[in-house]
Amino acid sequence: MRIPLFQVDAFADRLFTGNLTAFFVAEGSGYRLRWFTPATEVDLCGHATLASAYVVMNCLGVDRDVVSFQTRSGELTVERRGDLYVLDSPRGRRSAARCIRGSLMRWERSPLRF
Image 1 (cartoon, one colour):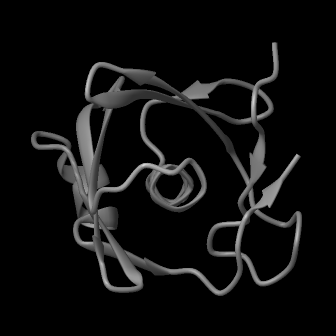
Image 2 (tube, rainbow, N blue to C red; image 1 turned 180 degrees about the vertical axis):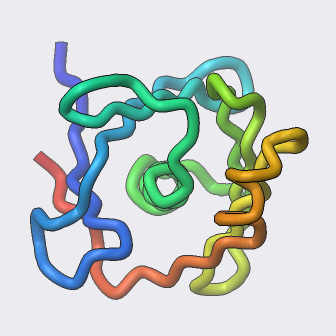
């Protein structure tokens, strides 16, 4: 079985300098998403969520401008607005929400596919 792998360096200015790892699988009309550091699984990672949404919308042939992810922090949605991606942070997670509410990301280059 072949499983596609994409390298996305979110918020990084050089190849292979991004951090954290995200894994997602299709589930219903959305995706289940999990994030990992080299040491542990984490509850929330905004930049890896934005990167995952970019891969879904641009590399997997999914024709939509909004994608939802089920995570340990609840449902997260990312909306594409032109060449920007907007993450709606989870409710009830005030410290995390302050950091990423309305996070925007613009992609300068395409992810690498292995």
